[in-house]
Structure formats: structure tokens, C-alpha cells
Length: 451
Image 1 (cartoon, one colour):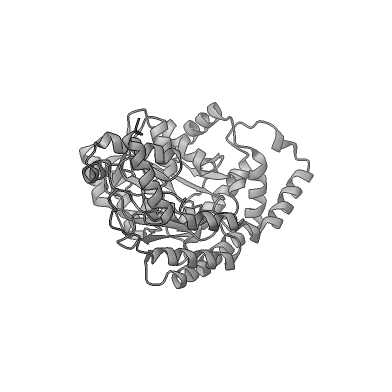
Image 2 (image 1 turned 90 degrees about the horizontal axis):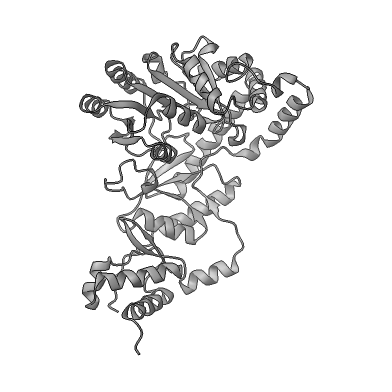
């Protein structure tokens, strides 16, 4: 009895992959295309692709197609000979080694004091002195806040975003976000049953007129914006754009969540959008990007009418964030050390952006001079998911544009986001960027070989 036809297709494609004729990261024909070439049915091809995926020879993405994985003979040999860890250009965080010892000292100092107030319950979301230091931190970077009683503490910016969505929207409500946005927002909205609507962007971020049109035509419950060094595009709104966005918020009386966790990277403070729409705006900042993700310290500046409501919601869900990291944060802020660390990180980012432009010369890059990350448009012969996979096969982690797309029905730009800070060793960063540049230069298009 002859073997099923789909297994013959599997055997042929596997041979082409291992011989290198189907290159790593290359996109395979669609089920229909290959079926027409082979005189068979799309169902037979689908079975073959499923088997290849189970053997980890290809990887498939819904709506985007199937791509060759990392099983060419050459890549097998390279991986067998290499014990290097993956080089991470996908995560946004500060260079932690720069001040890890200082953080150890601060936490030791806090814990050795024997302050019983750090171990008990408090009525608000945190101690008054911690909220006072939060007000000092946010005021330093452009937020108009005079009353620390309008500051609510949260266990990191992610917790702050989640709390605001749950407290101020209902299942089924519409949340307007940037067309390319932080994936954590998309995950939360999906999990909580909220509808996300993408708002078009330009080089400064969300377009005010498009937002205004959306608010006129739809019932928008909340608008979520990253105004500085936006994730993933690195776009930064200047003062006029921020005022225009605030005017839309005021006109339609819709809640604004201003996620300003990268504001410390601006060379000069830029007034927060919240300053111009204080009745409807929640401003979030944290120490995760400036000092350490492990501190889990976020500050939410609320409208004057909403502090008690949001604090009650946080008490009802987690009672209060742990006071211990906030005690360390307060010490760092009060001494001025937090601001010095943040500036050191900005200077590192400045230097690494220059290194990236040198190593990736000739490619189209978008960023601010002092951003933690950059947005790279791929050459025409590369598709974003295919490039991401090909880079991963070489031990380099990058983030595909599809990861940030708010509207799944829109065309995904062929671009990737590169973080420049997570690789602590600068020579290792330069080497990794150089490897990435070599991969970018490889035209992986090929003529499909008939099986």
C-alpha cells in the first residue's frame, strides 16, 4: 500500500529545507498555491504542513502563513557548536548592572530600620510619605500635581492599567488606543471583554482629528496613550499635540489614561496631557523603566473627584501594594538618587542609539535620540514574522510589528522593534546588531520548487 500523498509532500519539503533550498525564515506557498502546483487539494497540503509543524520544521501563523523553522543543516551545526544564550533585543528595561549594588544597599537600609509601618495595613493604597514622593517624581518630569492626596499607588504600571480599565469601563466598552500599541493593553482588554479600536498615528503618535472623529461616531469609554517614546514606534508628542489631544478629551468628556512611563527619557520635561484635561485624565508613571522592573512601584495621578473611588477599588482587589519597595523608592527620590539613576539610563540610551545607527546604517530607523528602543522598517524582501523567526534561529530575540497591532484586520507593517538596553555588555550589543545587519542584507526570496 502506498503512503498517503501528504507524507510524500512532507518528505519533499523536508528535503528542500534541510538542503537549504527553502531557507530559514522563508515563507512557504499557501495551501491553495501549493495544491495547484502539485495537482492535489488544499486539505492534503494542510495535512502536510501540520506534520511539518509537529516536526518543528515549519511554524504557522494564523492569517500570515507558514515559515521555515530552524532545521537547515547549517543552523543545526551552528547551534550544536554554540552554547551562547539568546541575545535579547525584545525586552524594554534599564541596564540593571549600572546600579544594582546601590539598590541592594537601599533595600538593606530600609529593612534594617525595623520600621513596623512597612508591615501593617494602611487606609489608603500606601503611606502618605510614599505618595508624597510619587508626586515629587512625576512633577519632576512634567506633571502638574500639587496635592499628594490625588496620587494612588499601584504595583507597577501594568497593575495601574488593569485597575483603571476594570474600574472605569464595563465589558463591551470601547477603548481607543494607538494603532500600534503596547501588547499588554491588548491582552488586558481582550481578557476583560473590552473592545479595542485602533486610532491612526503619525510621527508624534495618535492623531487628534482621528480620535475626535471616533469619539463623535462611537461611544468611546476610555482613551489610552503613551505620549513619550511610545512603545513600539518611539514617537514622542510635543506640547502642541498634547494640547490637541487634551482638547478632544475635554470636548467629549471621555476618560484618558496617559501611560507616561518613559517621560524621564525626554531631554527636557514636556507638560503632560493630563495637565490640560485634569478632570478626565489619569496619569501613570513608574520606576520600572527608570530604575528597576523588580521595584513594582507605580504612581497614578487621578482627577480630584476620583482618588477615593480608585483607591477603594485597589483595596477591594489587592488591598494595597507592598510598602517595602515604595519605601526604597521614597528614599531614592528624596535623596535625588532616583533622578541621577534615571539620567544615567538616558545617557546610556543616547550612546546606544548612536551605536545602533552606526551598525544599522543604510536601513530605515525611527526613534528618539534617547529612546530605549527603535523601530526598524524591513527591506522589501523581508516579512516581519519571517524575519523575527530567522533572527530567533540565530539566537537573537526581536519583536515583530504584528505583536503590537491593535486592529488584527489591518495590514501588518513589515517592521520590528529593537530594544537596546537589555543586553548589558556593550560589545555584545554591537556584535548582536552587526549580526542583525548581516541578516537584514540577506534577500531570502526564492522561486518555489515544484515537488
